[in-house]
Amino acid sequence: MASLYRRLVREVAKSSIASRTHRNKVISANFRALIDSNYQSKTFEHDMENILTFMKSQREYKTLLERYNPLVDLTSEERIEATARRVGLNMPVSKSDK
Image 1 (tube, rainbow, N blue to C red):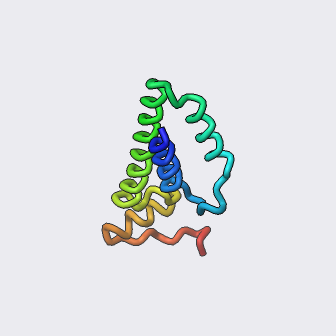
Image 2: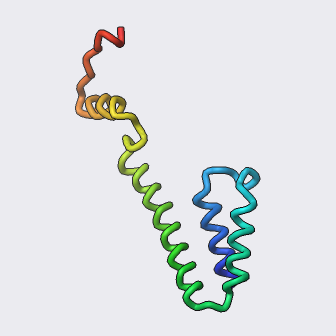
Image 3: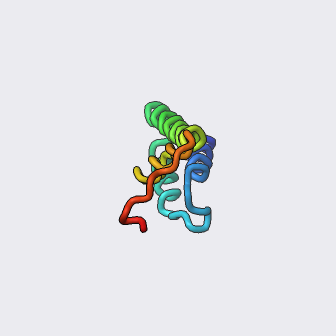
């Protein structure tokens, strides 16, 4: 069960945006308490494995989305301009932009 806890903490660290010093310590404490209270349950261990798989898959999905769809985090107007530039066009200047 200790290895499961370590894997969970590692996955949280990889998925986290904040640095280790800025992460909330309560999250780790809650994971530890949860694992300590259910360490003999096979269904709990199976559920934790599913959680780890989900977290890893979400992290990989986000990485792939950013790599292959670089327009994902742009506003709709920025996305239209980037798409137009990609095919060699420039968006016309509107009167409000002048």
